[in-house]
Amino acid sequence: MASVLYSVNMNVRKRVGVLISGNGSNLQALINAAYGHDYPAEIALVISNKSNAFGLQRAAKAAIPTYIFDNKAYSNRISFEYDIDLVLRKADCDIVCLAGFMQIFSQKFTEKWEGRILNIHPSLLPCFKGLHPQRQALEAGVKITGCTVHLVTAEVDDGPIILQAAVPVKDKDNEASLSARILEEEHRIYQKGLAILANVLR
Ligand code: GRF
Image (cartoon, rainbow, N blue to C red; front, side, top):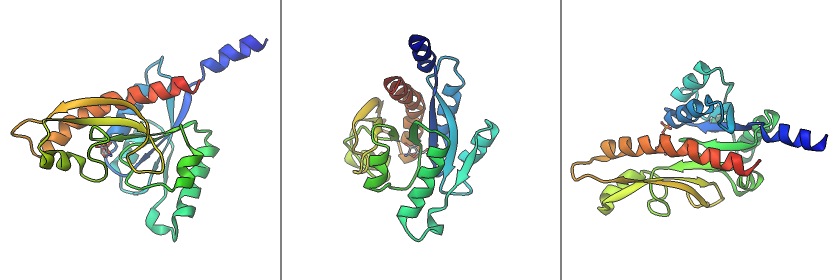
């Protein structure tokens, strides 16, 4: 009997909460991947700190529950994070994916979700952490940049790396053109990185 239960549990898809602040094209890539019959994760909910984030429409179209927690409406970070954590836990989320979520979590939050929270960053970490990494790459004159899927820790853009993709910088690139080519790679590797984590947590 125990072995039957074990094999049933092996087939349960990991429940994922995706946090966004804007366009949500990475969210869309995760939604699309999760339509796959064999994909080991499902998108259980989407949380945005911006009520006008386009990603909320993407989630609604996919019939995924959405929540808005406007960080500006909170007097402190602790209660903002408390509400996010509560919704994630009430929905039985196993994994959190940050997808263009423009807020930094406290050490307390990242420790609560240690090993279960992923981020996508548009550079080859540890290079070009923080804001405008594509602009940083152009200013540094590198010939190759890219994107990174990594686990989130208290240090911004610093956790263990799961996957990376390289993107050549072309002579004629500007920030917009480079960002667009990196974004294509983000869409490709974020869903792969999530699948790796979901399979590890089985
Ligand atoms: C992506 O480049 C992501 O790496 C960065 O912000 C951008 C979000 O894009 N953190 P989108 O909202 O997923 O379209």
